[in-house]
Image: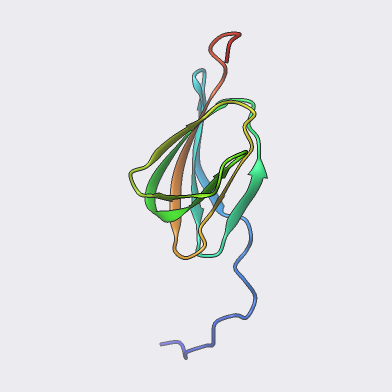
Length: 107
């Protein structure tokens, strides 16, 4: 058995883990896992995006809106090029993200 060690004083890696990346003709999907304290800074996608909260809870900030809590079971859809950020301030968070290319000129 390993001896107990004090937890590190530095915060966890700032980038969440991305895994299970899949891509085909209909788009791309992947899983993002956050440890407590991790955050994905504001960014934009050229595709329509669906965010499925698989486990845990966190905070989603969408451009022009107040931050809102998200939890397991929530599904959020964002239009292309909308700025958004996600964080897991207090507990672990797992998301499944689906990116779909624009279906027509009006997207």
